[in-house]
Amino acid sequence: MLTARDGYVLDRMLRDWQPPAEEWLTLLKRKLSAGRLPMDAPVPAGLATIDARITFRCASGLADSRTLCLPRDHVPGGAFLPITTFYGLALLGLREGETFHFDRPEGRRDWVLLEKVLYRPVATGVARPEPPVAWPTFRLIAGGLADRAFAAANENGPGPGPGPSAA
Image (cartoon, rainbow, N blue to C red):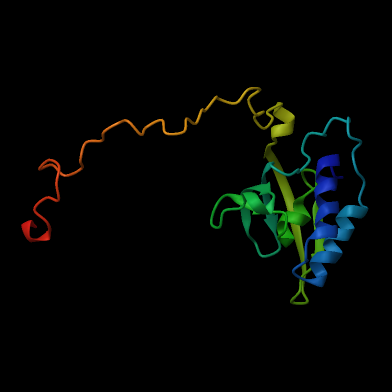
């Protein structure tokens, strides 16, 4: 089950993003064919959404804790799992305890299990910060510093200084 926001993001990816493999595109279309929550509906507890911190296990035996993220938020080697990866996309929209099976480009069948949703900003009411109503005022004055004399960076006073031979 996808939230309205997550469904919108996946719709945009289908339309605008070049998939890395045919199997990934199939996975994306499967996710889009799943149910969606209405815009105003509360997000159920234990649902993996974008920006949710989750723990999961996969067929390779890897067990990890990551934050599902958009590609622009991903930092290599960090604690994020972009939804543009097979595991990231497969985990999106799962509920705690659900397993999702999918095909990999190398021809093998893979699965991923969502163990726990540790943190979800939507559930805690934490939203992204709003921009300030009024931006700080900054004035440019033409020639504003023209009459000021600056102290020379040379510690010997004004002039060319002793030059490279002094070093």
